[in-house]
Image 1: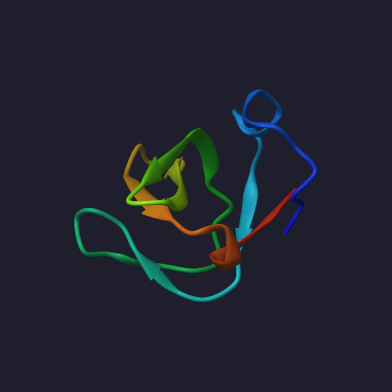
Image 2: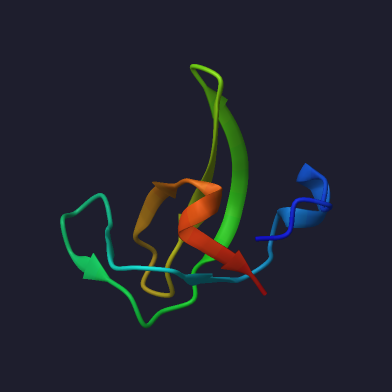
Length: 68
């Protein structure tokens, strides 16, 4: 995980999943490298909204990905 990047530098970057995750439609994802759409803070938790190549999205915590 790269913590030195600010929010503007994260947008558009691809990331590698550290473990299988489920998208909003319930599909399990692992081998893909989604693109970060935005960074959000919710209840003092930092999360990334990511988008997969097929357009599906999900929220991930920074420890679930490695920024490419």
